[in-house]
Amino acid sequence: QSQELSQVQIDYHAALQALVEDGTRMVCTGRMHTDRICRFESLCYSTEAEEFVYFHSNSSVMLPNLGSRRFQPALLDLSSVEDHNTQYFNFVELPAAALKFMPKPVFVPDVALIANRFNPDNLMHVFHDDLLPIYYTMQQFSDLDLEARLFFMEGWTEGVHFDLYKLLSNKQPLLREQLKTLGRLLCFTKSYVGLSKITTWYQYGFVQPQGPKANILVSGNEIRQFTKFMTQRLNVSLEESSSEEYIVVFSRTINRLILNEAELILALAQEFQMKTITVSLEEHSFSDIVRLISNASMLVSMHGAQLVMSLFLPRGATVVELFPYAINPEHYTPYKTLATLPGMDLQYIAWQNTDREDTVTYPDRPWDQGGIAHLDKAEQERIIKSTEVPRHLCCRNPEWLFRAYQDTKVNIPSLIHVIRQTVKSKPGPKKQKWSGSLYPGKVRDAKCQASVQGTSEAKLAVSWQIPWNLKYLKVREVKYEVWIQEQGENTYMPYILSHQNHTFSENIKPFTIYLVWIRCIFNKNLLGPFADVLLCST
Ligand code: UDP
Image (cartoon, rainbow, N blue to C red; front, side, top):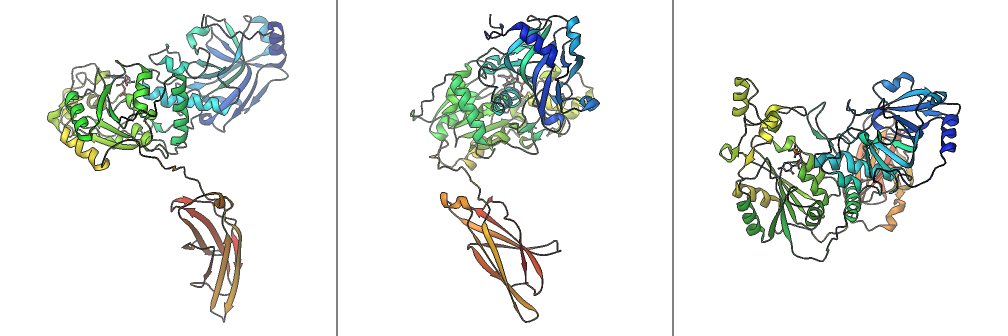
């Protein structure tokens, strides 16, 4: 059935001979285990030992060849979560001659992408840690196409969102447990191991309290290329023309509830004069949710993983995230960070319940649903009295869980007030003028000419040509920034200029060498590169 490896016929004897003679070949990208992805030929996996095996022969290659640094702490991260010690990849080494004494290998003919999912039952983790990184790892290596096969090695069962993973390739993804049914020694003809972290925007707080990643490298453009792919694979047709505007309330039905949802929906509909609908993961198919969110003007939801669906909102839409009592919105920003990525073009609004009367707590539930009955009395009392959860590390802070799983009666006037501070008229997709921001190139042919007047006065005439790409662009405002630095000094005089030449006389001394740095600026904030420094002697 679906577990069967592809129909591609391989000549078993030739494959076995190649493995024995050539061994395993590995070439990786990345300088550290946290940014490494490796490409292998003939990487094997022992389903009995549950270990990957690298076979040495005369033709095997191992780059980087790290020696025992391969274990400090690992060759690479198998998931997109950085340096998590349960997600490391390594292999054991054997001489190819040992194959004589081992189970007969079963060859995997498909090009394989081998990785770990991080938390496949949580929708935020599914998109952020798995689907986007897998999609863009596949974009990075051209033989990871729709005929490639995904292998998930983290050891979980399919999980509730497995259908989403299936969209990434035409072949059924295989789980670690299923490999046992294929054979005792599996050999991947061609495989890639590891995931690109280039699209991730959030760190979950394993070593420092959670927050946006320090160096975010993804923009709304790449996010939307991904959601376009997913939408097509889901067969969701986007009726661009359907003109009726509406608001989506994404509700949770098990915990962290909105207690006055009916009242909320009426209030939103009335305030914005728009149809307002609710969706939930329990009551709607994934395709329906994507279809509804893709055309929505506003998405309103409690803080929680379902808010990752704002990935699918159209440009110009508004995200309203509701936070329960004592949870500071500034400390939990995965969805704010997503909505405000450059080029995502979403408006983000956070609302917090600040009224104790409007919250319902569950101290007697199990600890993982926010119960605190297992804590000592003094600690329970401290938590109940506290008005804000202090910053904390992931993932089992009882005070955080206690507050995160409260239900909330949303104070409607307060919420509408907060939304109205941002959304002045009607929310929703604006007639989008193309805001793709392009940067200037270097200015060209920069020249300087000095003139000296007497022993204490001098002038420096500097001129340059426009950046090469400017003649193909419509740019609202073009300015030039010029820095003049006396050779050997740390400081410089900065100027912002509108023309392509200028004569500097202020603070210019005779018989001195100046370094002149020039760059172009489009529309106030698009800073181009500096041209090669000009050396000017007065
Ligand atoms: N979930 C849901 N309805 C609920 C509670 C949870 O659909 O009433 C989903 C939620 O969207 C997430 C998963 O169940 O995908 C785990 O929820 P949890 O509260 O553990 O995580 P959080 O939403 O806080 O990230």
